[in-house]
Amino acid sequence: MNIEVAEDESFQHIVATAEAPVSEASDWTCRVLTGGLKPSRVYWYRFTDAKGNGSRVGRTITAPPDDDIRPVRFVFISCQNANQGAQNAYRRMIFEDERSAEEDRIGFVLHLGDFIYEIVWYPEDRPQGMYDRRLRDIVRYEHGEKIRDFHIPTVLADYRAIYRAYLHDPDLQDARARWPFVCMWDNHEFSWLGWQSLQKFEGKTRPAQTRKVAANQAFFEYQPARLFKPSGPSLDQFDPPQVTDVPVTHFDEHGLGQEPNNLAAINSLRGYRAMRWGHNMELIITDQRSYRSEEPTDRPEAQAFSSDNFPELLPQEAMEILDAGNTYNGGHPPSTIRYGSSEIPNFCRDEPSQTVLGAEQKAWFLDRLKKSNATWKIWGNTTATLEMRADPQNLPAGLTTPWPGAGYAGFSGADSSTAYTEKGEVYDFVRDNNISGFTTIAGDRHSFWAGLAAKSLPPKPFEPVGIAFVTGSISAPGFVEAYEHVFPKEHPLLALYIGKGPADTRPQPMINLLLRHGVKSCLEYAKSGDINKARAASNPDLSPHVSFVDMGGHGYAVVRVTSNAFETEFVCIPRPLERSERTDGGPLVYRVKHMTKLWRKGETPKLEQQILEGDPHFSV
Ligand SMILES: [Fe+2]
Image (cartoon, rainbow, N blue to C red; front, side):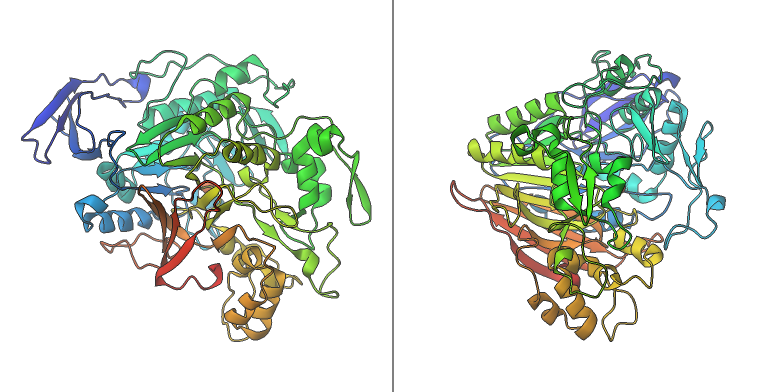
């Protein structure tokens, strides 16, 4: 395969050519490194095969040099599901970028994972579809495994097939042809509830070393990125390590499974890396799945802390005790945890505290943070760091049974936000080392969030050390859509999740109010239908770290970084059920900007919010 790189779209000024081998060994993909390009410049590239067949033309952009102080723009996204939705968000991004002035254009697209969903429903598996969605027949796994009513890949050929299926999407194709993509995997590139090289289905954990290696190989082949692999720097092929699916039984003091096939599988491709983009920003990307310890609230013993009376809610004090393991209370964890009138065994009492990053990656991450001299140090964490809290302790008596927890509730479906010990360690490090411009951007949660990074919330001290954002999904269904279909209609707490005001004809995303303002705001809205009265009933101690939350939003986030400010624009589109034929990708629901001026030592970061288009009603 011949590749040409040119300074112009019509290939009058070709600056580089190369021959790249393609073969079955890499599924007919190839990777080419081009040196000697000028910084901060647009280039075009194309491929031609031996018979003279040409590819479409791709556009890419080189990074600015380290001393370039000009503002930079990029987009961060996550969670596209081609089995269940349309990628209209990309069409909107392209439409807006084409109409922007040269200096306002997007420099790159950061994809924070769930580029594919390895879990696929064939249309006949669910004739009723998924929530509001029609299921598309995008792939058939030749060697797939059927679990309940869905299918998962089992071998390399299946993982390759799902990437190819996604890359058939016309909107994703155009986006990949327009911008350089910086991709990091989250869970679905390997396995839904996967951690290290383990899979979890129907409550059972099982070894899946061969599948983790296959997932890494398909990522290497289909995602352009310079990642470290122990088999050597060759870009021609992956050279997978030989592993077998052996049970992982021994974990070290950081929860890392010491079984050699587990270590070989997770080390077969290292995804964490840093990327400098001019004077103003360094992007430090981490892997939240490959090295993490087992999520404590995901264990069967943790079931004792959940109750159908309080959907999704777990007592925060229990989550904190389980997270800290044997480090709780200065190394004196309780043997039981009180929940209502029960004493539940503290099953993490003799275990190390939870880690999402793992010891080795965490040491690397903290070192990069400390050494970076960019104005803004941006943590690209695929999972969200902003805590999701509710205040069921403030429910009026008589509505339902009393809340069995001691105070606030956290949400199940834990992520980086509930790795309290590790998050505290990172934020203390930021504070103690006077690291300025600390920002986290994330995906995974299928919702838009803007807020402040703090290790604890009231009644504990609230001392932000940075800012944090989460982007809505490109197309995968979110909580609000799921609640509309599965939340019990007669539940006494319906008003907190997907309730209605007296004049509403359809359910509203009350979950946004619950997380931002608390139960009293939700109940006020259910009574009066007056959003201002509802906001006035806010519990100021619930979420002082959150400025914006939309558990039903889809779209993308545009970041503009300058030498004294960080701006994030959430571009929210309607639920992407079908592909829009419009050149702009369809209408917008809202566009909201959050701006933070660079804070000085001793100052607290502040977010200024501006609603530019539409009305994000329940989100502010
Ligand atoms: Fe996702």
